[in-house]
Image 1 (cartoon, rainbow, N blue to C red):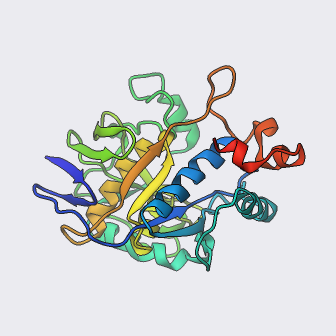
Image 2 (image 1 turned 180 degrees about the vertical axis):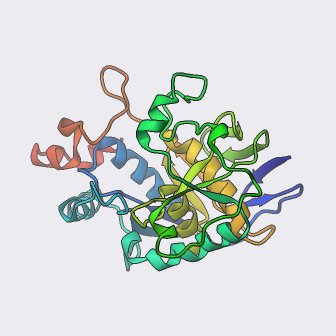
Length: 292
């Protein structure tokens, strides 16, 4: 089976486009200072919303509790305003929406699409001496041999259950495809290009994949603009949306912007302090010069 996204609908086999007004979003994560690469991607998102005569939301993706800090959230808002970007109020804050993620988790649990995972990062690292590793991925390929049987009874999602990791069981061998507004047709094979992925963490919080998919659907986002390093996340999120939404429900389209790199060809990260927007502002840079 091939899950195909044409325009804004995930459907098999005949999707139809959505006629909903354009809704875009900015989604900074306050784990450090925003850098020039963030500025370019957020500017693309704002420009596409403006060109479509649509709305632009701002969502603070602050579920990485070990790294997110209030001062980084405040700096992100100040830097985005300095860039001249405008968004609708109120700002959506993921950490204030925790109950909204438990219902979708329960639906995945009821459908038998997830399973508890007690493997540690050390366990996974020890299994990555190929063929399991996907180079450069944010979430390495989980060994299928570690899965429980598909018909195994699941523990309940009580307090103890919510204090465990849970993974989505991908349909091995099936292809997920979507047409990206920047990159064109993108395809991936489940179990080969990406494996079972986290949807819930043992600290009692949703994973990035679940929170992002749930929020984009709940907020009515019609196009997700983000960096091309997140293409593989899009495949995962499309699987979640297909499982959680009614058949033929409108889904976002996707536009994955090219990444900026440093002089060595390495993509910019928050450790590149010299290219942090805060640093560039202090050096007297003008925002219009950064975005050209």
